[in-house]
Amino acid sequence: MRYEAPTSINAAVKLLGGSKGLAKVLGGGTDLLVQMKTDRIEPDLVVDVKRIPGMRDIAAKGGGFRIGAAVSSAELGEHKALKKAWPGVVEAANLIGSHQIQGRATIVGNLCNASPAADSVPALVAAGALAVVAGPKGKRNVPVEKIATGPGKTSLKKGEMVEAILLPKRPPKSGDAYLRFIPRTEMDIAVVGVGVNLTLDAKGVCTAARVSLGAVAAQVLLVPEAAKALIGTKVDKAALDNLAAACSAACRPIDDKRGTKEFRIKVAGVLARRAAAIALKRAGGK
Amino acid sequence: MMSQVRVSTTVNGDAVEYLCEADETLLDVLRDRLGLTGAKEGCGTGDCGACSVTVDGRLVCSCLVLGAEAEGRKIGTVEGIASGDKLHPLQKKFLEHAALQCGICTPGFLVAAKALLDHNPNPTETEIRFGLAGNLCRCTGYDKIVRAVQAAAAEMRKG
Image 1 (spheres, rainbow over the protein chains, first blue to last red):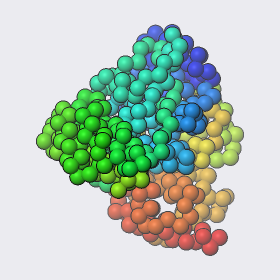
Image 2 (tube, helix red, strand yellow):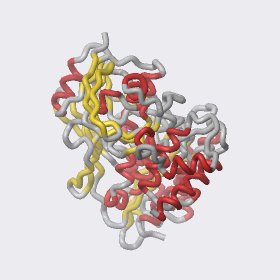
Image 3 (cartoon, rainbow over the protein chains, first blue to last red):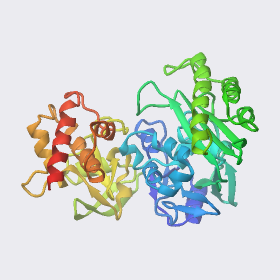
Image 4 (cartoon, rainbow over the protein chains, first blue to last red):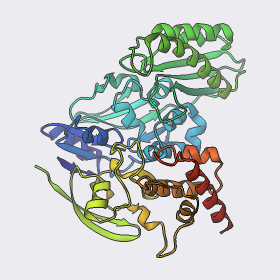
């Protein structure tokens, strides 16, 4: 294996695109090094992107934020303005693993590892986040829900890497939230995860919403029917009932040791309701 | 074919240089090349915290860091916690409270507890338990560790 730590995106892309065999991007390494240790992968090249300027920065951009690919979850949690604007995204990232893991793990890594149960991804999908993909043909912005195509699989082509996440500008009276179910209180993998992001008008009517589900399908789902259940309502009991039903209906889960299909379908609705209530409160609604 | 990487870094305040394999973890570098055997390999996959160290002041599992990544960083290990012969309050209180039995997890707990107290000098019991959730101990049942951290925090607040 070869280790490279380039100091520009162009050099990183060139290394990734020009490599023979398996080339992997190293950000926080909390998935990559485990996969190497357990012999699930044997990379020929590891490209450490932490020496590239901007990769470890959270920058205000166009009223929103640009989060570099190597920003750790702990750093997200320490960024007051980001936490205020996108509490759901930050709380989702901060749920991942221990303090030790938080010190290294990144949301770009969480996205590109493409686990259906990735905690930060439903929150990012609900937020309408974009992934900035750099590659041999230049850069493109891709909605985060288009990155994972199945467990461990992404739409990234050879030589491409995600260099940052863009979170959009927040309209007034907006709120987001992420909730997951795990059998313990922490340090576990989501059995179901739900991200809700909504905006209210002056009268408290929901004008925009995005709802996303994790761990209930082969990839994180954006659920437009669930958003429709909220838009045009005051997020009252009837709307929450419809939201829960839409979320349960969207689930295509598997049975595994952490939960049955039936359980996941039921819990998706329950958590969606609770996450919407938190998002509503954060948006200043009642 | 492995290509070796030359690394210049700082460990517990001392400038250090080493050659390591590209896929060699920082944990293996510390233990096998630098003779710092305080950090232990429990799981090797970031679950147990026995290999905890700090990189630029940030608590991490050294089994999930490549040795090559340490270039230009500041590494802190359990060996750097005491000042000379004088034990750190955490080390003293771990002894006084018998917060260890087999001792494998202890270096990781000390590094993690120090990182916790550096950040929050007066943690509640809940904050200590959550803060140390990345460190596993199979002997003590955790209670004595929590008491030792509380006692060390109290002593450190007195200054």
